[in-house]
Image (cartoon, rainbow, N blue to C red; front, top):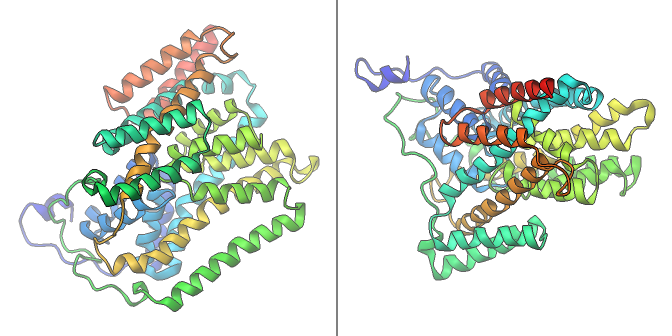
Length: 453
């Protein structure tokens, strides 16, 4: 029965039948291939499918889980899928849901990254990327606006955003230091001005009921989702073994200074810095991958973000592109296995980026289920989100500089790229065009511009 029928009168719908693990697996696999549109679009898809149509989980429980995921570093949509999968089918349910949210994107990005490096100079491919880069610049600026309208609720939040922008733009302060400083401001603010740092309503109020759900508001917490110190200790130990075992293997093969081990360590840190979504961690990834390790160039980073925008899955999957290009250029498995080495590096980047997300959900989920809305202290996150706005604005300016002055300040200003960027901005801000239609139109514009040029 549709959501409309459930809301609009008639015989009340029955509670859905229990969902088998196999049926859930098919859905999570499908979700991995259709999860376009960034976190907002992915969360909307899950809400439509799981709350309205299938009624596997109620609106209240869905939003409760989402609120927790929003507090964590990492991709909130992937974490939400992991949470619901875990709640329905225990630990393996969460692992399968979270992994299938990521794996299709990983395989697609490995293929696209190979095409990019192997055929990037072909006029057709070059024209597509010529149109995509200005679109990405507009998308990043739109992300800063979207987050800013939600986060900058008062003068204090505006001030934190401005300080973060100045810190990273003028003084090149590392992103983790900005996050730490913002968190400290939030903690102090919660004690002396709690009303200024209280989190706002991040989600719409619950809609009218869609009918009884399999996991409803009053459904008792299942046994596996109840907090246990012993279970938490086992999970932490398993996480340390998985992280430490993978890192030890990389160190054994190439040493601590080897590219793969350095990627593992770097993307572990990146995974703990992704407050505010993928756009927030991109400056940190840029600082480390481009400036410090020099695994790829700034231009390649923009191209990778364009690829990430065109594929399903979390936008933070751009780390797979970063890993692939770094593995390709460093020839991590030698010159005779360049593709295999690059694919391995992409997998390493993905593994270390997403492992913490699984641990946060599987370890913290029981605590969240025991609170139902009493998530506690959130002022540091409120301040961090405000700082993220300033950081993303700096990223937008960085992309604009590379796109509009491709040869640097002394080179010519690219009028065509500027026109595409302005048109993309108008489409996003004025007409609310979706990401995929926007990227498709800009890719066509780039092909036409290159053909006429």
